[in-house]
Image 1 (cartoon, rainbow, N blue to C red):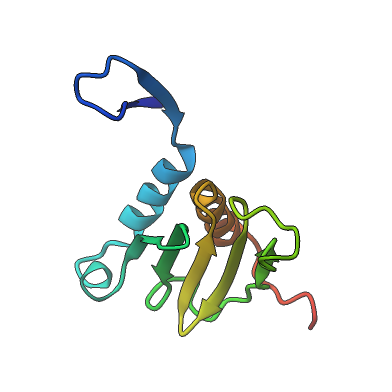
Image 2: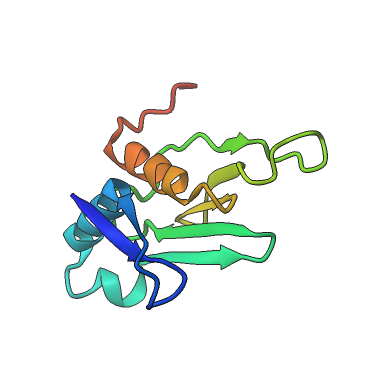
Amino acid sequence: MEFVILGSSLNNSAFAPLHMSALLELQEWYLAHCNDEWEHGQGVRVETLDNPGWKLVVDLAGTELSGKYFDAVAVNCDAGNGTDEQHWFHCTIQSQKFTAYGGPRNLDTLLQIFLDWAKADHTDPKQ
């Protein structure tokens, strides 16, 4: 499935194709957890950062993922050490929330890391 996004102006005839499989999959995950209770106190939030970048927070309380093992991920997070300031991300679990931060071109990466983890075996490999 593909979507199109208008260019910078409504009068601009240029369209950019955008494949949104991770976003569509996140929508399905969200819908599967809506039970007339969870969505009122928990949910999924996507925000922008001012450095610039993205923040993704998924509340895990009340889901099958609450308390499941997640090994934190950090890529190119050492700003100023020759890393690409556009491509970086950090994902962790804090207070029953999957919390991820990433560069301005890494929203799809953040979504995909969450979705891959949500579908995976959650056994702690250190045990």
